[in-house]
Length: 70
Ligand code: 9UX
Image (cartoon, rainbow, N blue to C red):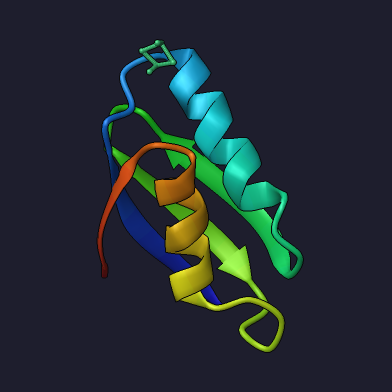
């Protein structure tokens, strides 16, 4: 499935890279597109391997706040 989650606190390209790596390193994530401008991350993942909650947790562990998925 594909979903977009809000990610707050990213201000530079290093933040962008940290969030991208935090999400893409999870098993079950197929692709991730992080937008600094829109403060979100669009993630394609296999829900049988990884949950949305785990993805949000990975982003928060990297030091960023997440919002509700749309
Ligand atoms: Mo640079 Mo982005 O400290 O937080 S990684 S602003």
